[in-house]
Image 1: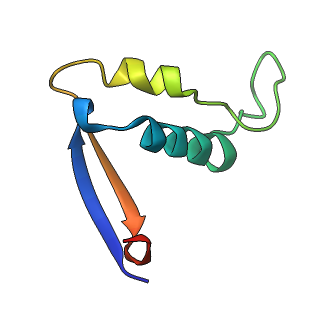
Image 2: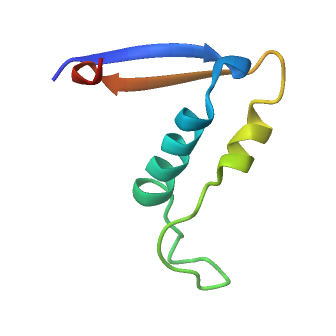
Amino acid sequence: MALIFNWLHGYEITEALLARCSVLYSEHYGLWSKHDPQKRTGNIKLSVNRIKKWIESKSAKMAYCENAENF
C-alpha cells in the first residue's frame, strides 16, 4: 500500500476532513485508562468542534496521511 503524506494550514482543512479525523480518533485511538478515577470505559470521543479549536490559530498546521489508492 502506498501512502501520501500532506500538510495543511488550519484554514485549508475542510469540514469533511475534520469529520474523518474525529471518527478515526474516536473509534480507534482514544481509550480511557483503567486507572481513570471516574471509571469511564471505552473510547474517548474527539469532536469536530474540539479539533476546530486546535486549528483556530493562523499558524496552525495539520499533518495527515492517506492511502494513495484514494486519489
